[in-house]
Image (cartoon, rainbow, N blue to C red; front, side):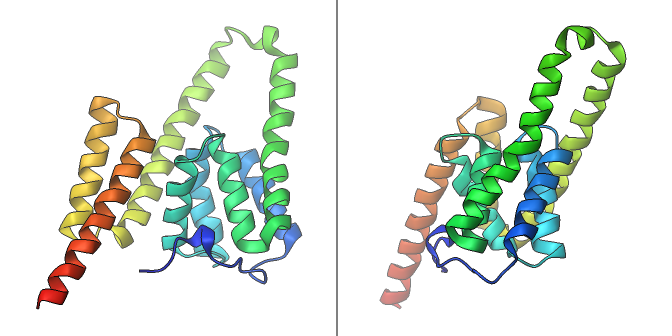
Length: 196
C-alpha cells in the first residue's frame, strides 16, 4: 500500500507555479457551493486533463481535507499546491483559491439590499445548486470506480453513506472509523497470510 500522499516528497516538476495558481483561481471562480463543488472540476482538470494527480491521490486529498479543520476549498488548495509545487505551490494555490470568492463576497455584500427577495436570483441559485449536486455525484461515481473493488470497500462506503445521510454522523468520524477498519482489515489479512 502506498504511503499517504501528503507525506510524500512534492512532485516539484509536475506543473508551473503560475499554471497552478491560475487553475485554482479559475476553479474557485466558476464553482458555487464550496469545497465539494470544486471536487469534480479539480478531478477533471488535475487528473484527466493535466495528469498532475492520480485518482488515488484525489481520493486521499478529499479524505485528508475533510478531516482537517478549516474551509475545505482552502484545505484542498493547500494540499494539492504542496503536492505539486511544495510550500510555494501551497501558498499560491491557497491565495488563488480565495481571491475570486473574496471579490464575490465583497460584491454581494455591497449589493445585498438590492438583491434581497429577487425571485429571478433565487431561482438561478436553485438551478445552480441542482447542477452542483449532479457534478458531485458524477465525480463520486468516477472516483468510486477505482476504489470500490472489494466487498469490504463496498461495505465501508455503504455504511459511511447510511451513517452520514440517514443518521447525521459527522463526516470526520466516518473517515476516522473507516481508516481504523482499513488498518484492522490489512492487519488481519497479513496475519492470515503468515499462518498460511
